[in-house]
Image 1 (spheres, rainbow, N blue to C red):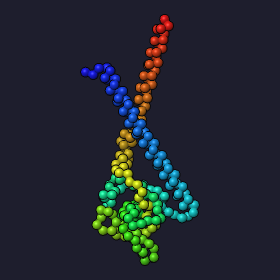
Image 2: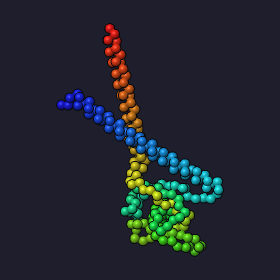
Image 3: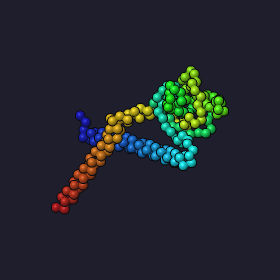
Image 4: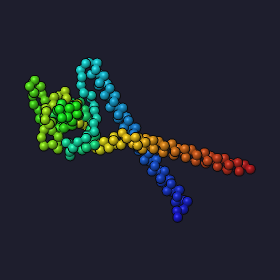
Length: 208
């Protein structure tokens, strides 16, 4: 049987770790929200500027979750990628483009540039291929189809996106931590109040 002192020590350790974990979680959420805010601001300014000048361009930044194995082992399924619009693309760059292939019409595809060519209109086009694919993509890709070059990969964040898209995901990720913090603060408040009452009683006893 654990003594009262050992129980208090274990409880103190549990509280410290719980507070440490919650601090990390809350700080991580704040950092992520700040990054999203900065990217959204850059996106809004860029889109507004393009709309004002009448010169349509893909957004300055974009983010996507990979759903196929075509870029393995460099990019895996459920990895998230951050892309940036780039006017100076080179062979070897991994980019995201809007497919015009009838089989994948309107789908965003992230593959690697393996070559360039010129179409019948004299426009420069790019040849793409997935690293895990044996053959290049069926159709060449024009510059206007390319939304940006991959500048960052965040492994397996797609699982988090899927988790948060479920109703129970929001409950576990948001509601439970908030309830935990509120409960901890209420317990702390009660203990502080009880300690203050004990001190008052002790003072009254000394005066008598």
